[in-house]
Structure formats: structure tokens, C-alpha cells
Length: 206
Image (cartoon, rainbow, N blue to C red; front, side, top):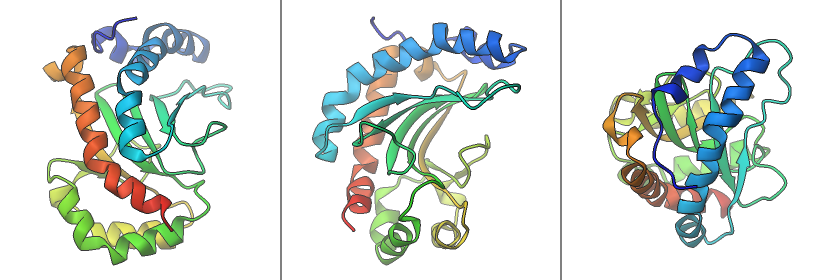
């Protein structure tokens, strides 16, 4: 399948009422596109991370009543799962597409990674472009521009708060022309992964 970008119908998926109905639309409209993106970016990602990166597509299996408000694909060096490891994400909310380097609360070595990042704060700040975003909770459709975020404060929260999280990357509005252009979006995803790869590699090297 050739990846041709995401369209209005894809983002409208999150307005469909009912768990089964929305899940069916996610599986039919969005998940095949996640597979296609992976096929386009996998070789580059393997090279820049130094690992074979496996694709994990969110199943939302624990949901029994409320339909998911977002959905995502994850890229991780671990074949069995991604939540306990540093990983990359590409996914959608109803109003934006996100490309994250993600450290979520299941990560067992959060405090060690946070301490390492605090020691490397100056280098990390130079690595992340100012138009990137930082999110502190992957379950909320909320993020701040890097230029408006106190990274040290975010890292300290990530270290001290049990369910603290850190996600760094891009959020692209659903109506941005890049989102609809498959070739341009893939190039943007590759560029984002390339820029965040040094941080990813650092977090594996504890």
C-alpha cells in the first residue's frame, strides 16, 4: 500500500460514537496507514538508532466502554512491547498528528534516564528545535512549545512524579497540507526521528 497521507475522514474517526464503531474505523482507515509509514521509515530508523525497530500498533484492548480519543503506532527495539522502553510514536488526535520520542510512566528506569538528561541538559536543549513540542502526559491532547517550556522543570517532574512522562517531538495540525501529502509527511517523520535519535540513543546508554 502506498502511503498517501491522512485526510479529513481519518481525523473525523474520533467523532464516531460507540466503542465498536470507532474501533472498526480506526482499524480500517488508520492502522493500514501506520503500517505503510513504518515500511517507509523503518530502514532509516534502524540505521540512526543502531537497533532493529519493531512496529507496535495500539490495540486499545483494555477499553470496554469509552472509545479511544487518539490512536498511535510505536517503534521500539523490543519486539514484545514498547511501553517499558524508550520508543518513537506516530499517531493522531482529532485535531493533530503527533511524532514523539516517548518516555511513558511504565518505564522502569525513569529516574535514571531523567538524571542522565539533567546532566546533559545543555546538549539536549541544543538538539531540540524550538518549534518542537513537549508533552508530560500521553493521555492528554496537551503540549507546549519547547521555546515556552522549562525543560529542566519538566525533567525534574518526570524524575520525581510516579506517573510522570516525557514526550518530545512535533505536533502538526490536522489541516496542515503536510499531513495530506504522503511523501512530505514521511520526510518530516524521518527528519524528526533523525533529530531526536541522539536523545533516544543516550537514554539506552545508562
